Length: 473
Image (tube, rainbow, N blue to C red; front, side, top):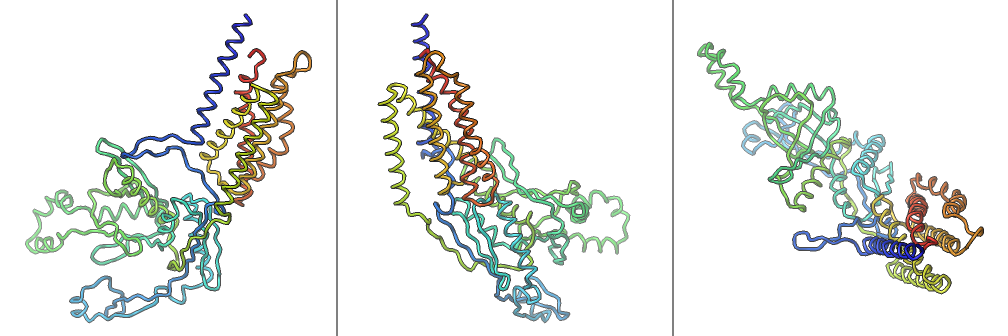
């Protein structure tokens, strides 16, 4: 019986150690799969704070340039006339400021700042500081340097003026006020994945959209539905009908740039318009490009039109506050510390010390995996938090090892060991929760990593501690 228990104990040792080693390899090295002939790590990257990753400093200022506009004899603005039309109708050209003086108010500056902040939040861009000089209207942004930085800049550089117009008369039929929200949708078929920009309108916009899509239906449908009436018209009315047969179309624009010019098959009654972005594709990079394009447009439409047009004045990269050499030295020191602790555990606790060391390294691998997938920014304070939870985990594991070496009445049950540990870390756990809800990246990073570290210490050691330090083994 004892021999059977010993064999079971050894088997548990081997299985547990192999699982820990596998977790460690996944966390520290990654999982690589072949994509388009290249091997890529599919494990999420760490999110480093601006002090470690560096940041992009952007200054947005009210546009002080001028634009040339064309006016008719009555002073009305004429959009995009040809030279021939200008000469025939006696149109005049004027240079006017992009932003009128009446528009450059502190109230409008504050509105623009709020829209910029909303766009950053709507885009889920993490890691930014924003401030404004209300006298000049200038907005100073510090953005974390990551894969989304250039994409978010294309969002912030847009004024976001949305209009649906009659393509001929240029009459504005709908604008930003009628948009409720915009979002990105997908549809996958055998030919590939299609990306859509879905624009949802307000209650007023829904009614207006239905009216417009009815007025701008394709001419063939209108003719078919009123064929009998046309047959009964007089010759005069027939001539008038011929003149009116020219298809009416709308043009949808953002910041004066046309997105689409179209008429409609049938009235839209659900208050939503879906626009296809690009073409159906199976290529990951191509699809990501379409998604980024649709996501940027959706963010701009959802957050509204800036009352003042801004332009980018400065765009420069600021290096990380902490040189990479110092980070390398810190990593070397950490590795030496891990090696010394491992040697100490092996010398004092022999086989269990070796297994405890493997267990500790595996624990840190689990923590780092969780950090990758919980949107935690790693900052200097976050690194300090990692060191703290490594020490806390070490203390718990030593307590488990020493308890497993005790015999008789001196030995506590494993759950009793955990009970003492939990009572000891309750104050630290409360601090971690408080810090996790702070806006400061330093406090938030410290609190979140400490929170997950304490939770994982309990779960991880309950699973592996019971297996590795079973007295029967």
